[in-house]
Amino acid sequence: MNPTTETTSARRWPSAGITRVPAWIYSDPAIYRRELDEFFAGDSWSFVGLEAEVPEPGTFKRTWIADRQVIVTRDGDGIHVVENRCSHRGGAIVWKNRGQARTLTCPYHQWAFDLKGGCRGVSLARGVQGEGGMPADFAMKEHDLRKLRVARVGGSIWASFSDRVPAFEDYCGPLAMQRLTRLMPGRPLRLLGQSRQLIPCNWKLYYENNRDPYHGTLLHTFFITFGLYRADSRHATSPQQGGMHSVNVAAPGERKGDGSLTRELKRFKDIRLNDMETVQFADEYGDGEMTAMQLFPGAFIQQHANVLAVRVIVPKGVRETEVDWTYFGYADDDERMQRIRLKQANLLGPSGFVSIDDSELLKQLQRQVEGYPESQAVLEMGGQGVEPQVTMATEVGLRAFYQYYRERLGL
Ligand SMILES: [Fe+2]
Image (tube, rainbow, N blue to C red; front, side):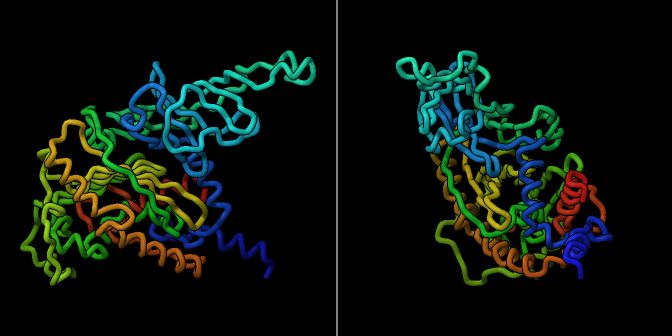
């Protein structure tokens, strides 16, 4: 068979539509490149940090939007986000993840930029003893760092490479904004910690996992054992903005039925915790709810019991995904609440009692989908549509995402 024909036919989306996902999308390098350019570096907003991470003028933070590095700075005028890429030769200017600086100076030829990204100095611009140097018509102001659009909500900082993407609030839509400002209402935030992990899987497997409540009480035995997340509790899964984003809400204290369902689910029979504070949920917002929200393409904002976290997907290759976790609380939390948040943070992160299941599962899943690129996943739990559903026995979040995904990439 002609190899070109073979590739073309293998690259067609299954005719069944969004209830099927072809496995080749998790290992195809050309698809991966398009995702980075059109999603992460395209018309989207990305989480780049908390205001508490750049607390005063002259502080900066380096972070990644997929494979592009950016610098979040603060000066007397506010917070700025610029690409960490020298306008001279393209090198990284800042090599540290955090620091203090009055100017940003590239180590290669020491071109210097102010904290807004304005080009302020070109070394040896006039040459040496009348020889060399830049041409007389060279204009520094034409060589600023690339500046990103910035949005700030309740102490969080978001950035976009796009001039066309709608304002952050419109990009999120009303429900996602409401869930975000529930956790970040403008009450000053406190950074509690950060962690980072590398998972050997395509970024979409991780993205899907987080909007898949179906696996929550099946894979995560810890949840069932300690009742933090239950299949028979009130639950809502709501795709947003045509499937880009997703809002999941669970109220673990509100049960439907007689409990027979959760009795059937597997749990650790003999495991007890010495310190139950790790799994006791204090209803601090007065609605009994836990919330997990995804903002396309890479940000998850999460309240699991009393752990508040933002995690960011940083794709590092077609089969490698970094997940950056930022745990936060409120500056006015009392000592007890701060302790509870830190204890419950053991549920999440690289070795979290719950999250570790996902990392291992997705690593194995990546090998499987790579080995069978022409196979298809079946997504029919909760029907075939994309309407919000009030159950966790649904894959509506995944179907809605792939509806959006196919539209964006024309697949
Ligand atoms: Fe999970």
